[in-house]
Amino acid sequence: MMSAVSSLVPARFLTIIAHLVIVITIFWSRENNVRASLPLDFTQEQYDNEDRKLVVALAVTLGLFGIELAGFFSGVSMFNSSQGLLSTGVHASASVALLFFLFEQWECDIYWWILAICSVLPAFVEILLFIAVFGLKKKPL
Image 1 (tube, rainbow, N blue to C red):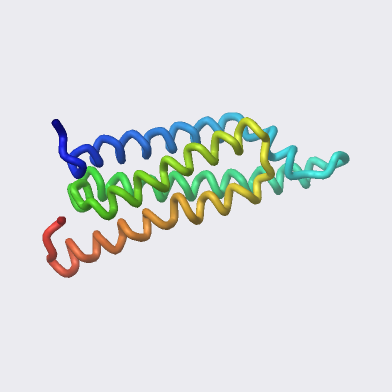
Image 2 (cartoon, rainbow, N blue to C red; image 1 turned 180 degrees about the vertical axis):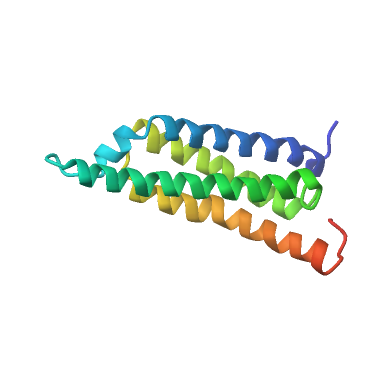
């Protein structure tokens, strides 16, 4: 039987990947969310502007995934139970929230809130762990 800490590692990995897959899906099918953010009689310029803002948010999310996955696969935070629990919780929450974002065609502004809470927060903690391990020479746990 797996201990609670060792079962966090696969749970964290799976929730990060689930979140990543949903973000990539939103990249491919963002048109409805962009339209939901616009008035009924929008111009092409308004559409392009709103689309660009969503693409930037999605690109930032992918960059933050890079930071978090680098820390995870390098071993900096793989067995850190605090980061594992935080990461698992926020990525699971992001997965649920983004499914609603996708299927209920929420406005694009909501994505920035999901990004701030569910992607920036764990990436920021990951950066702190990088600094602790590589800068301050602490052990990864």
